[in-house]
Length: 117
Image (tube, rainbow, N blue to C red; front, top):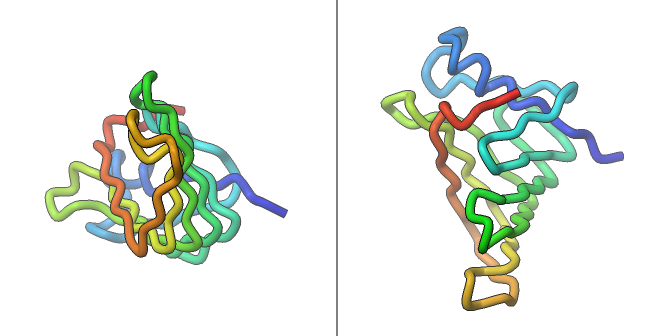
């Protein structure tokens, strides 16, 4: 069964309840991040498994990002959330390249201000 996760990290980081790079996820709610929908099948602390991200930040390039695993954290400044993904498939790859792209590692970084309920 696929579980939609709460990126409680964003709430904790935005409210100052977490220490730097200390992110905790809970499998109870779904969060949207200004055009990003993030889901994971399993959550173990900061480690994620079976990740699916729908990226709608650019209306002309709506894409799906899938990863076997990943890790969530924040930048050193604490201003951005960082998802470091492993064994990644992105489709479409770009506006010009509609085929899927495959990567060993892909880093997705976005401002904590993207968070909305």
